[in-house]
Each structure stands twice: as C-alpha cells, then as structure tokens.
Image (cartoon, rainbow, N blue to C red):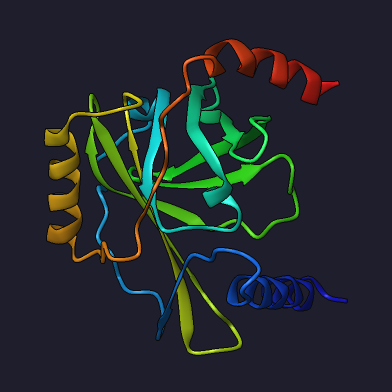
Length: 208
C-alpha cells in the first residue's frame, strides 16, 4: 500500500473511533479547517519548563485522568523533548509519556509522541501566550473523506491551580479569538500533592 493510501486508512480508523460513543472525541465541525491567526512572533524559549493542563476540548481518554502536566526541555538542535504526567482516576495509577516538539516557525510547532511513532503529525498553533501565566494552543485536522474537520484546543497554566483572574483572562482571550468555549472540559488538578514524588518512579518503571 502506498504511503498516502496508508495515511488515509489510518485517519479513517481515527474518524470511526472518535465518532463512536466509546471514547470522548475532539470537536468535529462542518467544512474545512478555518484560517486561524497565531502568534507568529513567538519564539521557542517561552515554552521551556512545566505547564499544567487546565481545560481543553476532550480527546480520547483524557477525561479519565487528572493532574495532567507537561514538561518542555529545549535541546541544542532547537527541538524540545516532552514528558507528560497524569494520574488515572480509577485506581490512582500514573502514566508518563515522552515525545518531541519541533518548532516549524515562530508560533507554529509539530509534536510527535514516542508511544505512537506512526501517528499522523499535525501542526499546533500558539494563539495566546502569557509566559508567566498561561498558553492557548490550537490545532485542526481536515477529514479527507468528508467535508468536516476536527478542532483541538488546549489551555495550559504555569501553576497547577491558577487564580480566578488568570482563568477569566484566558477565557476572555478565547472569546476574543472566536474560539468556542462550550465544549471545553476542565482538567482536575486536585489531590496531586503526592504525584511529584510518584512521577519519577513511574518514569523509571516505564523506561525499563
């Protein structure tokens, strides 16, 4: 099978899964991806460090986890290594993921996770950024077999539990940008105190 046929087949499976009632899906809309303006003057350095997931369009099994955070570490080749952490609500078990982020141009980057190296990559746009408080990230995928697209929105903050003022500010940014807030799902960042101790041991176990 040629590569483009293989990619279409993979995406067709993704469409089926995210359209079913078995998983929570990202937001599906009519038409092709809109032309969303992003911060084309943002360089890579502000991404450095730890960010905590506050709210997002639900995607796959994210809704079954809490205490989600992402560490970005800038490497000399201008590529980031990524490490994500989260706790499963059902049994308090932890999950660690690793990957790479490549800056395509200011404000635009691509992510590839190590646990799914064959996944179709797509571009992420930084729509709004306050380096000390929050970042709004947007992505979109056109569906080749239908006149529809999937939209993704993630809001990360610099602290696990930001102030109400910070929340109101990024929600106002979303409204200003014309991003729908109705489908946003909040991430629970409660009862995460012991996760700082657990995550290193989780990472060591998963690397063996």
